[in-house]
Length: 490
Image 1 (cartoon, rainbow, N blue to C red):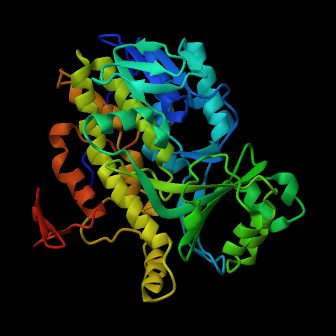
Image 2: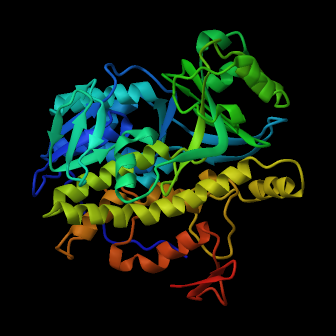
Image 3: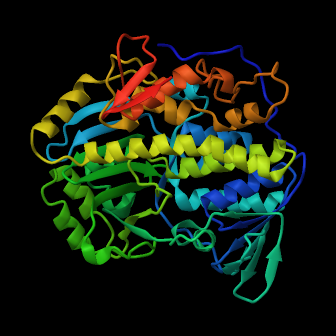
């Protein structure tokens, strides 16, 4: 079944707020800075409160997928980011013990043309620095060393700093991460406990400079090629790619968390190199050599936690940053086009919540499939991966199975990268139904566009149903689907 399409037209994405607001954003990370830039460009007054006194070059590699890249293009930032980014040509999915390639997912020019923007990787520090510079140049009021300790008890847009002073505005946006003061306050206000717990996984982050591996020809091949490497192993997986103009090799190692480490939720906690090497002692020689190049004292380790009612992003689809950027895109669009703030926030929730529920299911399935141990299920997974070499963007039908690695699946890529959340928001708020804009981007206009809200039902529910594991009852045109004894009518 093909995705529906409509005639192409353009949108002026230089949005101007109908009702300018005074917006206070807590946190100067990727989400906070991106949102601030978009809001300021559309005419709002924006203040960012950041608890640290200095924003340092922290973190490691980060992926910006097409669904996020097109938002940065509309915010006027993409060209600058690409100066520091690496556009991946493909993603190679491999076995942990033999280094055998099971399949490869292409990310070349056709991929960028299809989704209207490229998929690229870069160092998080470079991304944050570029966003910080742009926010300041746009006139965002950035205040460092401002720790928020209290939110108005009636949930008004008023907060207190550790200095004792209060700041008041029209809207507070919390972009302060897993230790969010705002979330804790809201949970307490409604009688809930704000708590997080271990997902069972932890992660090592490694950045290997080219000088460490320049004598190793195999390692240098990984460094020189713009290919993402994804090794699957028992209870673990490893993702790697070059950043900073192919001078640093970024590696992310997801592994079972040790019980005594569940408190490690800081990006600055140093991991033990020998402990890491022991964890991966049964992996291929190529991988163990790469890990051995990790500089002593520069291996970062932290836990991956889950949050009550708010599933925290886990690194199995590389969509954490991109979804935060989508949040920014929807908020900026809704707050620019809405006559009142309540309507804007209701539209934000209606766009984001259903999408997040499907994405979270995809994350859970990918984690299970990547971390399988020896046995019949593993053999079946490897066979499925080899057989399901779908072309990028293949359309959903009930006869075709989903790729075990959702990141490499054409249908799931359509859902992750092809859905244009700013366009959905625009259409939901647009009063002139005769104007049905589609995306036109610097990288080309995609043949695949998101259907308007009144035409969304059949195709999008079909896609979401497949991702969530529903199967049709009856023939191919059946409107009734089932999963584990449940039923769904569309």
